[in-house]
Picture 1 (cartoon, protein in one colour):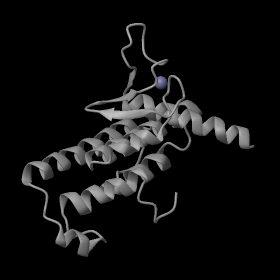
Picture 2 (tube, helix red, strand yellow):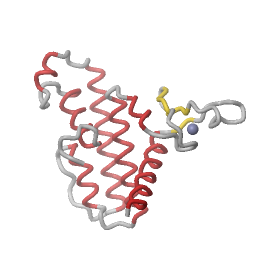
Picture 3 (cartoon, rainbow, N blue to C red):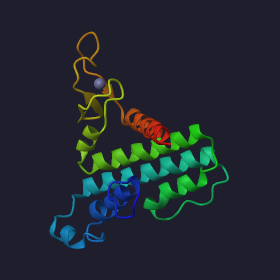
Picture 4 (cartoon, rainbow, N blue to C red):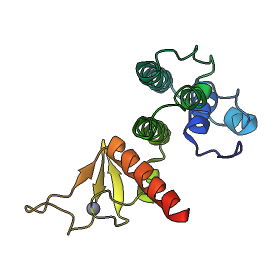
Length: 176
Ligand SMILES: [Zn+2]
């Protein structure tokens, strides 16, 4: 992941902080200055979201790596720290960690109003491209994926993240 990539979980966290929570502090300074500052309830919700994400990532890290050093002060550095502190763990645990980070990246995108990010993932059940985000779950539009009563299958962000990490891994294995 390159430093200029705005779609990594860390970059999204930084965007949330600099553009949504405290507009004007980010590097898109001029754009943010022209835009209206989000209302206080929205900023409180974003603040809570950031705090919860960092707390979850920190707790997860400390649970699997009790000797982990102190967490960086900057929220956006949390994922980097998390990977460093758990790099020695077995592949299963590293996979869990990667899924958590990826899932948080999806959550950040949805908080920013970019729920279309879900469309860029195949359905974990049928593998087709037709997921969309509805309130709090990803829904598959493939009618062959629906249950016997015709009810569309739904997926949590955690399930989508786990599927994404598994696919990435098998793609990497095929490439070697
Ligand atoms: Zn499906």
